[in-house]
Length: 405
Image (cartoon, rainbow, N blue to C red):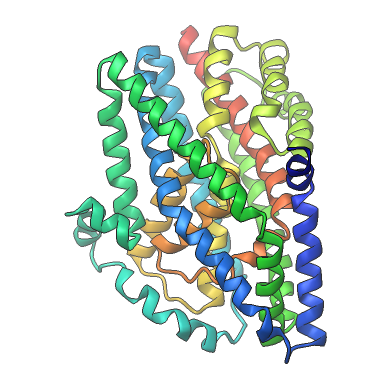
């Protein structure tokens, strides 16, 4: 057990080392890389195998648990509505910046794209508004599960989760317990797959560098830069505007007070780990009532993932541009819906990478380039956690004002 803890504690650094090693292998030994390339394909197959069941069970359990917020009345409804609103705004910011900066374009990936054309040909978005809406509803949920139609899966799982929430307490609690147990088993599977993540990343990065060269990494640095812009807009412009419009608190005081919790979140990359500090800041520095803070903040640490939502949208645009995938209106709707529901339903899902797969699959974007993000995922994780807890605190301030009135 100690070896496992040590390994996962340093997994981020191991993946970074594997990514650098793979890049050097691809640059200096491009002819020999084909020997290790199949290991990357094996790793991606294992990741894809777990996406649908893990996201499905997580969404059902999350929707079933959220059904309990009705008992909290006004606070519960306003909290959930605020988290939904800010998540949609976050996704929109990511899509807008991805379109403006066009960060993934400029690479010739035609050969790689063609190898994925058959896999994604049958998942394409249907044209037209009503056809797109109708496409959200699966005629056969099991068929959608087997074929990986993510939007249809999300719709059914949400609907089913709310159905579970409507049951009497004894039945509901037993089902939620079972769903959480399944999630734990799936997380165990993810942990086992992550043992070979460094090998898979090494193989995939080596293959990418041997095929396309160093410009791929230049694009990756551009993605980090654009993400920082999106985070700045959402954290230091959007949240203060919401505070100004819907509470009596000075936005500058809010930003100054929450900085302590942001630093803890940045260093730990854990919203739950930062929760005691966020509670202390909200109750003692921002004058939020303990009743409101104790409800809003734990819920936010579970379902409010605005930093993740920006990341999902940017990653989708990044890879769509990289692989020259033309996004339709249906594709953008798919990204918005999947990124929003995926970020809210992320409770229990270890790390965001699997949910990036879900967003890409929903919009018919190849996922072969996803391991490029693994090496810098720790950087993204630290940043987005700081964004997430800022959103939690802003919700607590605003909801507390309305609950008092």
